[in-house]
Amino acid sequence: MTRRLLGGIGAAGMISLTVSAGAAQDEASPGGRFSFDPLATSAACVPGGVGAFPDEQPFVLAPGFVQTIIAREGDGGSTDNWDMNTLNETGPHAGRFLYRSHETPTNGQVTVTDLETGTTRVLAQRVDWNRLDGIVWTPWHTLLVAEEMRPERQPSLPDPMFPQAQAGLVYEVDPVSGANVARPALGAKAHEGIRFDPQGNVYGISETAPTTRVGTPPRPAPGGYIFKFVPDRRGDLSTGQLYALKIVMQIGDRTGEAVWLPLDRAAVQVDADAVATAAGATGYARPEDVELATSTGSNRGGSNVLYVAVTDEHRVLRIDLREPNGGAEHETALVSEYVRQGVNAPADFSNPDNLALDKNGNLFITEDTTTPPGMDIWVAVPANGDQSMAAETMRFASLTDCEAEPSGIYFDKSGRVLYANVLHRGGADPRDLGVMITRE
Image (cartoon, rainbow, N blue to C red; front, top):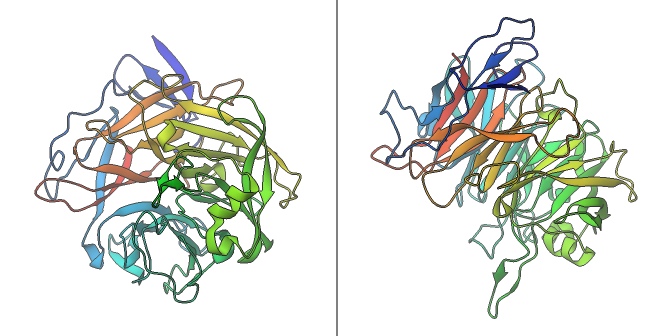
């Protein structure tokens, strides 16, 4: 039995997946279609994973795909904790340079690999950068990189220019020189995923949970919110309005009609979570990555649909942004449950973390589970009709290292190359890896 589905990575042009009971096979068509068999189970894992330098094979992939190691921890002075990726999506030499964040507790780095020469170098590093995580290419050809940090969760060094910030900041980085400047107007919080919409607005989250309890005696910690930042001037992130999402007409589990609550501009630069809590924003249990089709383009549209991985709830939200018009306070959104464990994803789908959209709207999802084996990459396939929930969720790849985690999945502009990092590796050679996944 063969089921025809839309989307995927592979040959040039519009691409579709065919999920079949047989081996991967080519289908001659102008659309460049290809087939793959989903993996039935997670890979059996061993310390360090399969293969040794220089022939590491960290993933078991669906038939018809291959992996290539493009960089290793230590290359060009790079440190560990390889996290998120982005390419120079526009401008001169677009697609040549792969940038990544390093989620080290202090002395954080942004490194870059030249995909033509294979060389890696440190682009920027600061002793007060704490747990760099989200990274994105801006429409005006710079980088944004964000700290996933709250002081009650881990010690941190404050930015000497903004010592009032009680959580992580966003930094704008020159992709050539590495010169950087903080953008506190986007909020002090535990940042992770960060994306732009076509209007130049910025979306992100706070990677915390309203059920977390801290302090003595324990008290609820603010967090778990979804944010939108609307700059006062497109292309200038020094000033603007930060909003937090609130469900106002609930249909399901914190889904339904929502509005964007404007937050105090000065207070969010101290603690955006506390301000969102006071405003009545809706919290979720550890949202992590966000994704929009604007990152790499889409043949299915969807540039005004935001996906949010909610890790501790084992689900991914879909937010119809209702054609953003500059951030009016009355602007609404529609939140639905796109993927959920045991509903349209198998029971062993858990702790969704990083997200990446391919050209036809297939949402690739990494796991960050607590019990090996099971560090997998899944694909949520869009439905042909009502797209508020994915048609199904299938296993695309699985890590062979019991201690490692897949991170930073990211498609190039062609939709033919999927980049991923392998961090927290075990075994005798625990160096993090940068991986390129392509069709054979």
